[in-house]
Length: 115
Image (cartoon, rainbow, N blue to C red):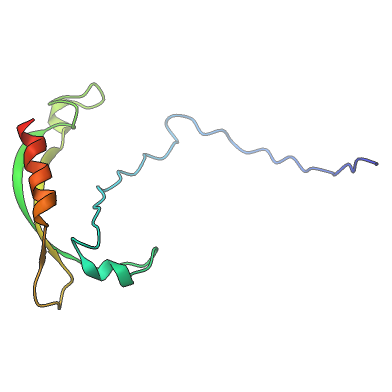
């Protein structure tokens, strides 16, 4: 069997230096729900966008990242504020009642906090 040789065109492109590299985008947090939390998700499709109404209670506030009050990567004056929230209910706008977190999930969270 003969090997085929292909002609390859080489294009010179400048190498990105540290100064010319784009700043990485901060990813927003994700939210995971199951069909007990929000029954409507059974009829939803991956890749589509949906609007939710989420009722939350703020449980903490801190300055810095999740690993401590200060990070070696940032100066203190540029450290973002960080808040943690407990989800109380979730609903699809236009539906009559919000779907509250089920009791089993709530009990598991409480037990984990006590640990």
